[in-house]
Length: 61
Image 1 (cartoon, rainbow, N blue to C red):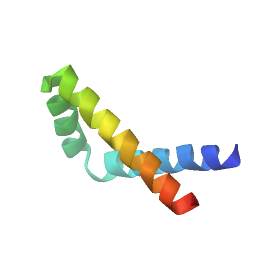
Image 2 (cartoon, rainbow, N blue to C red; image 1 turned 120 degrees about the horizontal axis):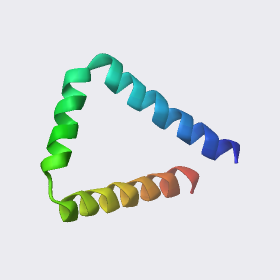
Image 3 (cartoon, rainbow, N blue to C red; image 1 turned 180 degrees about the vertical axis):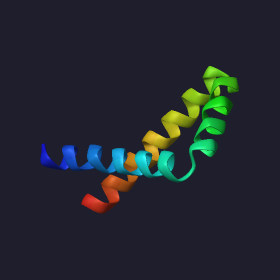
């Protein structure tokens, strides 16, 4: 369970740094996401999740 909490904490750190260093860029990313079709976002999300699972599998393997 502590590993899950560590992973969530790292996600928050990365997101926080992005918003702190480039707020304008993050707004542009959000606007772009709003204009992107749902199916494209879904595929990108599944791909990102798959890469994440693969990386964890490799690291933990």
